[in-house]
Length: 372
Image (cartoon, rainbow, N blue to C red):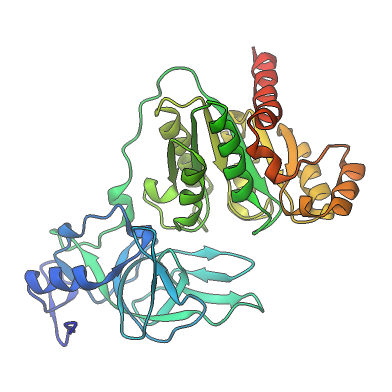
């Protein structure tokens, strides 16, 4: 039987905390389902549960599942999706959500009931949802996890250390999309698989989005020798972060991957080109786009392909190929090719080593030569 906190006391910092001894707290945390977004957290550092205050993005909480809604499973630190039941206790992190096909959600300003905004373990207050999405699974926070000093533990505490920049920059290919579910991750994984089969050591990173392991497992399964995302830099999500912070996360992740003795880095930027963080990262004054040797666009349909190509060209980004869901339809491909003047490549073609190398490495070499 799970232990419940029935009373509270004030700790040394003046905050209201659950009245539990450390052994009881450790056992309770051990029994909880721990979400993917919190995978770098050392739960041995938890000393108490704070029961008041305004949470920040990245703050960690123990919460109880109330009513099951859209997300009926929680992705655990292992990657397994665990079935949720009312009354289950989970360890998740606060964060905003920007998902046009699911939820728009914000970090609440108190520890009242909130929502499970993403299966990777994001606690937030849902303010809007897609018509096809169910109501969110609801949570009741038991308390924020606090350390020895009595302050809330935050994911930023567990970020990877800043890496040293070693040697010349690797070829960096960026996969972007016209919208959520346009085929970005499938395209990135297919490319990585093709390059890896051809003997290329490929590293991967996802620099924006919502904490979830499925994209990381996809690129690892495809052959990436290292795969990181923004949760490794201490952020549960990137939605709503200041532009300078998003830029820093992206630069840091690419540098982290480059330091792993790879030949090429494949970067995925989440959601669509009009999403705030995506647009910020690929537009001045951000310096991140200057690091890209090639940009691959995943489009959901022909009109999206045309608009996406125009958006990228206006920013002088090195668009090399259009692929994604649009290539499921030969007719849609012909429409997009006629309007953009570019040849579209079906996603499955990138699993072929020769094809992957021709489309990507050749572009990278051309860009490098022009820069020299």
